[in-house]
Image (cartoon, rainbow, N blue to C red; front, side, top):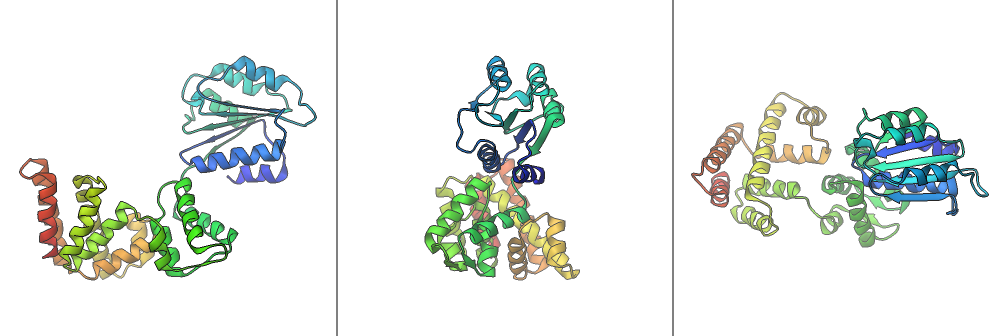
Length: 325
């Protein structure tokens, strides 16, 4: 993204750009940013097409024509599928673009071995725009909060990051809900985040595991039945419980060896500091022996379901009762 930002700032544009990857928000953002910088409100020199294999003749005619009262003509092509198939003629077109034309492709997928991909890279720039990691997500959230002059406590910020899942479109929707709740220039506390931001299934399984660790059977089953009502498969819940207890056991072992939260996060590939802290707090409620016993029960339950000895839902309910005990 650094090169994209540099080109936008300098207004020195390459002949071709490929924006690809699973982050639709970023692809849309950069398409709009380039359109605004290159043409502003001018639509006479703009051609936008969406769909498979756009008419190459029409594309050539448009880019070979001199701009009308402007420096550039701009072509924006979305979801063409050209970067996953043989695209020799389109590659030749990109290679022959005049200096007065800019072509931008927005694609979800692209094969780097594709001839068109190579030609765009030679004549312009190909940028993979993927869902950001935890650091990138944090930077995005901070920019949003700063833009709306919102203040947030540290606990609320950690909780917010743990609840924001999915791509940037989903994250933006959740942040706008928080903005509507707190208002421009408002202050955000942890209770505000809990009131507004939707919990993911993974986070609710955290709550379920906490209830199990404290022997709160009724609370654990309340969470469990609410997830079932939302059509979460019992086997997926069993998988998430199994993964969480495995993490708890690993953290218990690492804590006894004096490893810090950063080391734990790296070893277990957990991106959120909030998740690591919460897992460590939960692990403190267990002995190592109890966690080993829980893992044994979980694996026995998985085996009973796989072999048909028990149906999924009853097996999970029996497991939860045993874990509470």
